[in-house]
Length: 407
Image 1 (cartoon, helix red, strand yellow):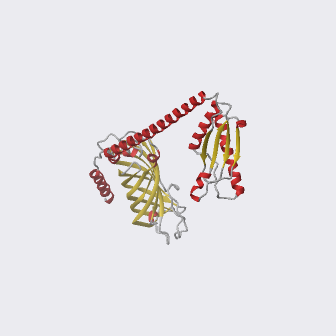
Image 2 (cartoon, one colour; image 1 turned 180 degrees about the vertical axis):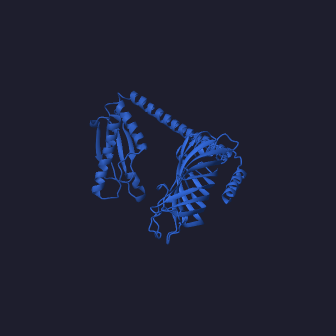
Image 3 (tube, one colour; image 1 turned 120 degrees about the vertical axis):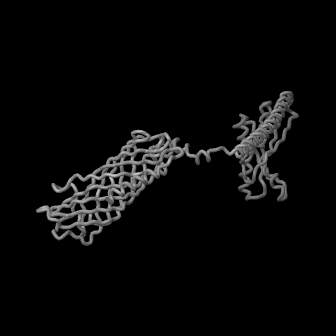
């Protein structure tokens, strides 16, 4: 009677708890039927007859015990949901000397995890694998008998808390109907499942393997339990996602204005560079034309240029390279012209170091004229000079190479 009332109460709870969801159906009710199997478990103390623990499917005095039940599930996300249910059934078991006959009724509450929906990104899944973990409030009763003559050796009627965990596979026949195969391991915190309380033993274990059918309810076309988390049906359909994905008009306008300003600045800089290059090209062409006019009269040509270096450096700056381009233009315009390069150094450092630095600076200018403009080496002479401008504030004027172009 108590079992019937419990089953009817849970059914009423399931029906009253159903509600329509905005985008995906999240409520499912289902039924299941399966095999209850008392697993062998080593007790702390064996009974007076010296027999081992009883187990199901163990000889003629046991049966293929059936359990059946009903559940309601609320899918919180595509990954996990909450499931409440009621299960009842008969159980038998035996050892070498005795057997028992009993029944069990459980009120279940647990969490389901849909692993497939976490891994896949399809719009919907047909097959899925899931796990479950939870607990049950169980009421069980059993009588124990001797195999020899059927005499009753004990009986029990008690309540216990049960922890359970399991796994299963689900086939979604449609968006409304699903088939499930589940196996759940149960750990009972009492040892009277077989009609006897062993001294010192306070637990028992059993397995429930079931086949079930679930019906998803709701007004929407799709169900959450077979919708992967990152599919467009869930992630991109969520109202919070849509809200977060709404464009910020003020931010976009500001970003566009900043981008336009940057483009204008870049274009302005490029325009300035182009104007500078055009001016240099014009001056360069003017120089070439002047040299062409004077190529037969080079006796009066005496061109002096200077390039400067950083402290202890022989690296030519971009400005120095422009000066050397002009020098190369003179040399190329008239093959009778030659160039003399004289290297200098400031007063800092030892004379050994500065002597080598003077020569290296002159050689750096020579190598640039040869490698960059094809000036013949036999038209270039290098020298060094120890003269220098005095005064600490004027030492930058001594880090140089003087260039003289003449016949």
